[in-house]
Length: 383
Image 1 (cartoon, rainbow, N blue to C red):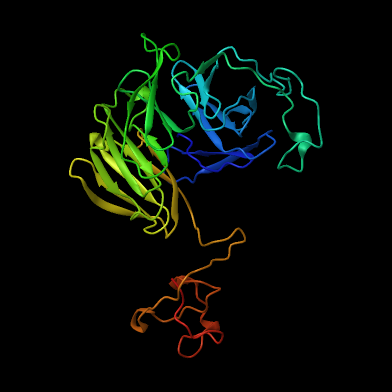
Image 2 (image 1 turned 180 degrees about the horizontal axis):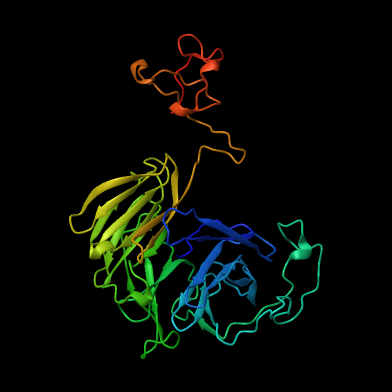
């Protein structure tokens, strides 16, 4: 399973999908020794490593077993945005800072079998350092391993990257999105990362920040053709052909009122677009790219879709959802009262706004009035 998350705070959590579909997911975690909130996650499925980073350091953990011991620490670099796993065991990070930093994973210094060895230099413990944690003594004190290669953006020193992805169908093509509409290629004549650096194409049509770029298949799953898909904060998902500057297909994910999370997948060889809406529709729409039409909708329980991930091996879609109207304590806000016909209420009534909607097996006949109403509230409930 590929990790797909937008907000990871201090703990790595792994979902283990058992072969038996009847078994529940198992959640395991490990403390992350970073001083601030970790916002970026990337995985190396071949080596069973998960990389987690804040705006500075990168730490790697082994998730092949029941425990998730720390493996290595990578030094901070002047790059903030997401990580990217490259072929041949390399990890890249780029962003504000005019460079791409690349680490070759094989041969990196590790924390050793006791998980306590210092990687690089030992940093001094400073209780006054800026951190979001109260337990500052648990913050990793290794300076980390420096990158094995640093590639400057010579063609655009002011480049600020938001999203990037590999395109498996055209050699080692790196799509990056500075702002909303530009993608660059970084490769040399032999298709290796690094060397000749130039902008080879710019794809237009986005009305806001690009939130997601997908190609439909992984690097190890064969060519993915000439297409890629983008989700955008203008509520639209777009399909691009790398030989054209404008999108070949645009679908509406959230009625222009919220960010759209889009994933391009090929279940049974059929090109399908999954779009997750955040504000208005709050569901997942399934689009047939050939018919250029929505096939059906997947319910998310009236929750916003924060992110989507496709497991091509099992033809399974994963969705991370949240309730924008629910605060951190669990109270809901801005819901309206449901207008439910009395004939459809059944033998009980919704008690009140605080209790929410009841299902038929949950009510207590001893607490109901003679006409199926609670003494506290005579309303029909809420949506």
